[in-house]
Image 1 (cartoon, rainbow, N blue to C red):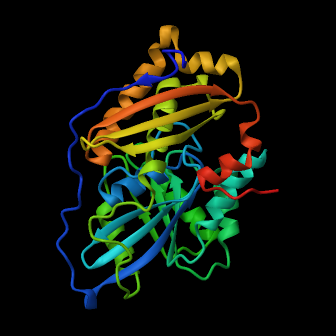
Image 2 (cartoon, rainbow, N blue to C red):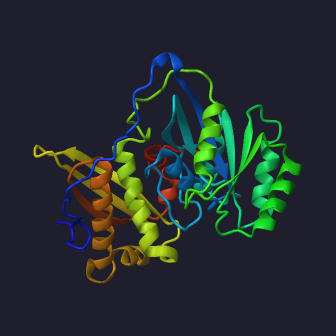
Length: 324
C-alpha cells in the first residue's frame, strides 16, 4: 500500500471556463503562421506567450530553464491565427538532458515565419544573448528583437542594448515590452499578425495550445514544484502523468509520479508530515480544475530514481529527442 504522505488526494474544485471569445472569421480572409520565441533562460518567453494567447498555456517561474520542451500557444489577432512556439532557454549544455532542451529550442525555429528573440531588458546583453544573436545570423526568416521587462529596466540602457544588438544582427523590427504588465504586447501582437501569410487557420478558434491535457497536467504540477520549493530542488525532478481518466460524474482523475534523484530530495518534496506534497497537490489541482474546465481529483506519488535523466522513456514522455 502506498504511504499516505506519498499518494495524496488533492480533492476537487468547481471549474471556470476559459474559452476564446473571438468571433468566427471567414476562411477566405484568414492568415496563419508560426512564430518561434527564442532567447536565453529567464528572458520571459513563457510569460510573453501567455500574454499573447490571453491565458496561461506555458508554466512560469522565477527559475531559469523552466520550459523544457517545445510548447505551442495559439493566439488570435483579427483574421490571423498565430502559432507561438515557446522554446526552452538556449544555454551552454552540460549533460544529455541539457543538450536535449537546447536541441528542442533550435528545433522550434524550423519552419517559422518569424523568429522573436526575447531579451531580458534589465539584465543586459551578456554572452548568452550575443551567442544566440550570432547563431541567428544568416537565417532567412524575419527576426524581431523583443526587449522584455522594460518596466524594470533602466531606459537609457535599454536603448543602448537595442543599438548594440542591432549592430550584431540587423533585426527586421525592435519592440520594447513588458510581458508581465502587458505594456507594448498588443502592438507587438498586431505587428506579428501583419507578418503572417494568407493561410487557413490550423486550429479551431477556441484552441489555445497544442499540448495534450495529460502533458499540461504534468506541467502544472512541475510549476508548483518550482514555485514552492525554490532552490531546494533545482532541476533534479520530473513529473510524469501515469493515469488520466474521466469519471462518470464528469470529473477527471489524475495520478502523477514525481521523480527525484536522491532520498534527501524526496524528503524535501514530501515536507514534514507530508505537508509540502499536500500543498503542491492542492494548488496544482485547483489550477487544473480551471484549465480543464471540470472538477479534478489529483494523486501525487514521489519516487526516488537515480539517473532519471538517462532514461530514454522519460525523454519520450517529455517530447524530447535523445541526444548523444
